[in-house]
Structure formats: structure tokens, C-alpha cells
Length: 379
Ligand code: NDP
Ligand code: MG
Image (cartoon, rainbow, N blue to C red; front, side, top):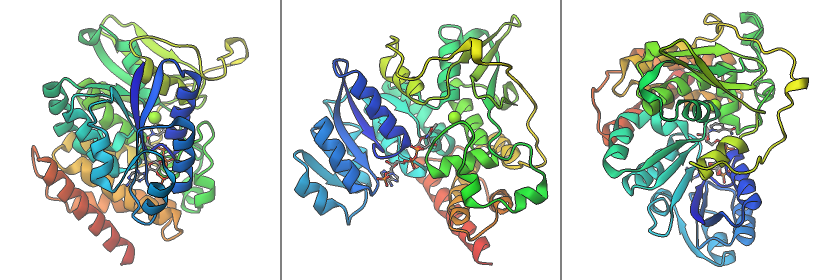
């Protein structure tokens, strides 16, 4: 029985993870749950899964949680991060969205837990701190992001023979749109992803291709490859979840239906494989699989991410923070779709990079970038 904590349990990844638990009651036990502000849903989850601990970030929701929940409760960033280090937990799923996930990731890694990492922002901003810490504490990082799970599965035991990795991207809903069409994109259109149903922030990131850019930086840290060995290829069918190119010219790819329960379950079951939680991939009905180079002109976010990753230091944290602010303004109808990358570029352009930053310096750069991005939006 693996004892797990699910942080971000009320979101898209969190609820799919609980579905995996529901299907494997003799293999997984939920010891702790945490959410941002959806107290009703969190309470319903505690009633079903009966964890020993539950925490919420939102102060306003806490009284209701502590009243209704028959377990130990906590509120705020520290309370949530402390769940990640609990003695009685074997594995922590970090499914919190955005840079808010960093603290819990940091604590889980420091405590030497197995960490199923969905929150890509943790590695993007603080990979230079988190990866050495994991090496020190012995924490095992199990990628949940479908592309990284695919690469992790293809690479098993052959890390030394990897030449390149190929990260696939669906291209999002606007893959074939021209710049004047892109300028008029509304939040409703951006929130309709052709292949995946996900939380709002990552769905917009998928439409701008920033999601793919963040995944490139995430892959750089997870697999220890330089940026020239990480390639992005557009694959609209979202069946091949990524590929590894080995030094002998062999490519191994990972195929499956686009359903996040498969990589979530693999992170839970590793090194075993359990029964399929999703619909079966029907190879006979699949038709063709296409691969194209990304359109850099229409989707500058991908290049910005490569530039930020290549520059290193605090620059990826600045890219991520400016993007989070710009995306939330886009979702509130305050800026246009093309302005998202424009704002990120401006903030990156005036950032004075700190080399080999501490976690505190990274968080300070994150805060600075948020304030700068807000400034551009007002002006
Ligand atoms: P959602 O927006 O659906 O869910 C986010 C979760 O985080 C919710 O449970 C939310 O709580 C919680 N949360 C938000 N802010 C805080 C906070 N400050 N403290 C504690 N909890 C908080 O996002 P997704 O599930 O789509 O994504 C989660 C992470 O996984 C992201 O980093 C994303 O990039 C990554 N990911 C997601 C994929 C997907 O298919 N969805 C695929 C690959 C990666 P509440 O709702 O209660 O406010
Ligand atoms: Mg992904």
C-alpha cells in the first residue's frame, strides 16, 4: 500500500489522480489532501477518501473545512507545504497550478519523498535548486507531465545512450491561424483545447505554445540535457507523447490515448505497471500520425522559453512569472492573445539575471517580474 498526499486535489490533475486511487483501493491510500480555494469540493473529497490531513490555501474557506472535516486541518502555504514532508507519506503528487507549487515541491524533495511532479513551474523556476537537493536527499522525481512521463519511460536504464529528446506538441487550437486571426483570439476560444481537458492556465499556455516552452525547461532539468539536445515537434493527433533519439539512430516513442490518468498512474505505480485506467488506444482506427516543425513566427513564446532556459539563472523564473500574470490578464479580457508573449519578452528584456540563485533570490525575481508585468499592463 502506497500512502500518498495529493496537493492540488480539486483541480484537473488532482481529480484525475483521485480517480486512479478509486480504481486501486488496495494499492493506494490517500493520507493528505490540499486545495487552493474550492472548499466544498475538498470537503467532498475528504468524505470519500478519508485522509488523515486536509489543508486549504484560502483563509476564508478554512473555518468551513475545519468544521466539516473529520481529520487534522491546516490553512496557508506553510500548512500545505508541511503535508509534503509528513512521516506517514511515501509519495506526494504536486498538482497545484503555477509558481505556488514550488514550496510544496521543495519540502517534499527535502524530506526525501517520492515526488510525482505535475507542477512544471517548480522545475522551470527552481530546477537549479530542486535537482541538486533531490540528489542530496535521495528523493525520486517521477514526472507526471505526459511528455516527460513518456520520455522517462523510453529512457529507463539507457540514460547514457541518449542523443536527443523530441517533445511532441499538439500545436493547440490555433496551429493553422494567421497573425490577424491570432490577434483576435478570445479567452473562450483559447480555453477550447482540441485534445486535452486541463485547467485554464495550462490550456492558454498550450494555445500560445508557452506550455511547450515550459516543458523544454522542465525536460532540461529532469533529464540533464543541454538545450540543443531538446527538440520540439508538432504532432496534432497527440498519440505519440514524446520520443527519445538514441546515439545509434534508434528512436523510442511512447504512444497512448491523450488521458492524463495514464501518466499519473505510472508515477504512482512505478516501477510497476497497473491495469489501464483509460480507454484503449485503437491502432486499427488511428489513421495517420503527422509531425511538423513548430511555426516560430506565430508563436514566439516557444523561442522565449528556449532563450530563458539557455540564459539560465533567474531568467526562467522571470519568464514563468511574467507569463502567469499575462495569462491571468488575458483570461480577464484585459489584454489580447498576442500581448501575452509580448509582455513576457519585455519583462525578460529588462531583467538583470542573477547567476546560480538561491531559492530566496528566485522567489524575489518571481515577485519582481510579476510587478513589472503588471506595470506593462497598466501602461
Ligand atoms: P487546475 O487549475 O485545474 O488545478 C489547480 C489546483 O491547484 C487546484 O486544486 C487548485 O485549488 C490548486 N491551487 C491553486 N493555487 C493554489 C495555492 N496557492 N495553494 C494550494 N493549492 C492551489 O490545474 P491543472 O490540474 O490543470 O494543473 C496543475 C498543474 O499540473 C499545473 O502546474 C500544470 O502545468 C500541470 N499539468 C497539468 C496537466 C493537465 O492535463 N491538466 C498536464 C500536465 C501538467 P482550487 O481549485 O481549490 O482553487
Ligand atoms: Mg504536457
